[in-house]
Image (cartoon, rainbow, N blue to C red; front, top):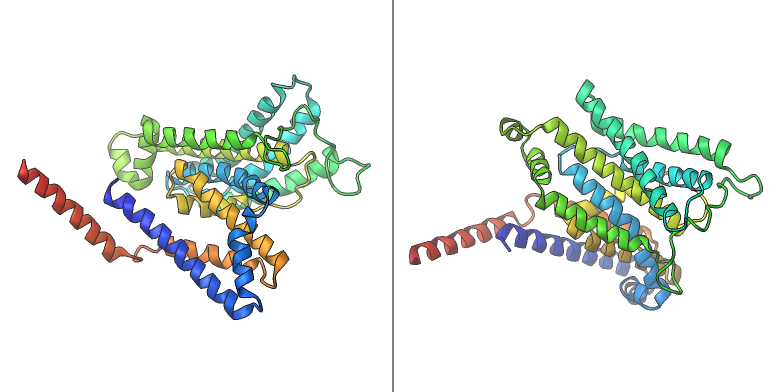
Length: 355
């Protein structure tokens, strides 16, 4: 493990610790039962199988979206259309499941793949606009999310809506297409394994393939990549396509695993969550499951704390913000980083002289 990796682990760990300590301070200042609130926040998710199941259930979509953003952001393109890609993935999965008849083993696989393709189209559009028109991908991708949302609401209200239901929801997705649960007493479904596989494959793609290497070089220094003979446009499009595909797959998996009808009439916020996960994971897909588990655990604990004490769940939003600020702050522990690098260089030089 090199000094840079050690430093990133140290800085992330300290950032989380400092953010939690500040949050605990706020609890002590505002709550009439601060000790109980902190205990519920930290240990609440472990107090029953169902509560811990809530953590894993919340973790699954965060893994998909975290890996998707890690790949898209690796090209240094701030494409935020993953939110819409996830949403459209769920919609397309619902439409496909309701209008096709496939065997039990094939139906969920095909449905999820189709959802992934829909997601890839969503993130590809802002990328193409950037290449063809030099438009700001940040703005176009944000607008894309709302186009997807209103399109999805139209389809839900006019095509997929079940008139017998007492709310704006789709017809029920056939049970043959739904993802089966893997732990009795919880709603943890087989999508957990799919998410972990995606994280592993994402790591292999990013760090063990030629395209992944070119993608990282492009993100670090686009001019250098271009002068090195890398087709920057192709690499950028691949990253946006693949990231959007993973987002769409995540939306399909979430719909088929946690819902039996499409009920999403507003954006779910997973695109923004993915940025938090990616920041904590340092754009490394293999670290995403750990970051996703941490965020899911924190939010589940906050929900339990809010139900059991007088502390609001908004405290977690403060904690998240503090963590992100500290993790991305380049000057935080910068002097210590320089000392670590100098110490490692001196040790390496000493070993060479000894030879």
